[in-house]
Amino acid sequence: MDSISIRLGRVTVEEAYVKVPVDDAILRPPNEDGIQKINTEAMWAEAIAIGADHPEWIVDTRDIEVHPTQKPPPGITFD
Image 1: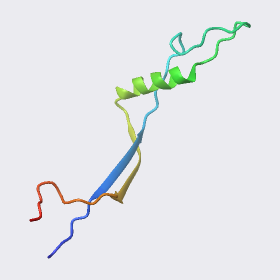
Image 2 (image 1 turned 90 degrees about the horizontal axis):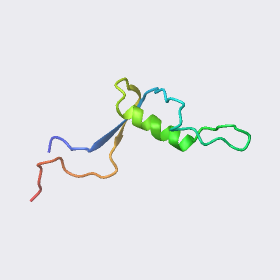
Image 3 (image 1 turned 180 degrees about the horizontal axis):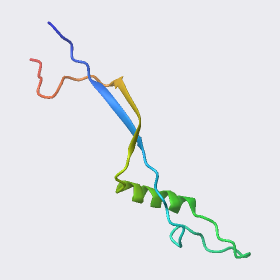
Image 4 (image 1 turned 45 degrees about the vertical axis):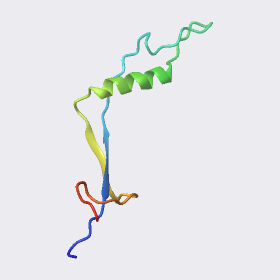
């Protein structure tokens, strides 16, 4: 035996900055004083939708770890 196969996992975290328009899609209806507040759940959903098509993602971190489940490489069988 001249080597041992170790299954690794790599996690890459990327970041992007998106601009979410402040419009009726993310604003709550005015309260009794006429003040409108942002619906943060709608704002996050809109940011994710915009980010899905965002071309400028920047790598923030990249971690390589031993995968918690070890198995043979694809195509390798043991008889």
